[in-house]
Length: 264
Figure (cartoon, rainbow, N blue to C red):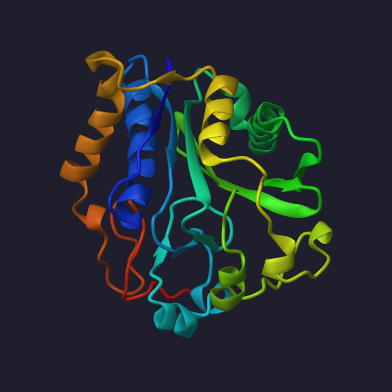
């Protein structure tokens, strides 16, 4: 069974931690021979926050002084990819799947094509297309970036969908990446990134239908999977609220609030 939840926790740190807690919960369920409750989760940060990929270099990807001046925290997620700016108008989704149920997704490229292809079909907009490995564009503007984290038995695919986002803030806090996909054509963040012409509720509804997800919360049996993951997050990782020494990777949440994790 695949459930979907619309759940934003109080802080960006906790939201990043929950994505990984859901991944761990599915992995543990499969490893123990159980029937895992796969999950589609939506959340939206009420405040701007910069999130680095697992191998991103802070000094190359982020204007730390600008973030400090704007009072924007800098965190790190467990999945790969580059630095992103989240905040109001940026819908985040996390799809957590069993690799035993979806063995075809053990192939990374095939998993991106399958998941993003379903997303593009569900959103059903002329001009929406997959670009590169993990981007979705509307016309010539990127509206979704995606990344993955894998365990032995489970896959976390999470991404962003911009629908009413202040793209001008990206220019102020993110450094233009040295490596860029050809379709970007050296455009600045503000010109390269755009918003999708759908409201958040419509995006959620269309994606939930595409993955045949049942809403969690209709009964105690539906609430159990994600509540169990919340308990796992709270009880097994003291870093759920994310304070870490510089250079430390912390617990399974793998997200940081200052002092910054500096990768040079």
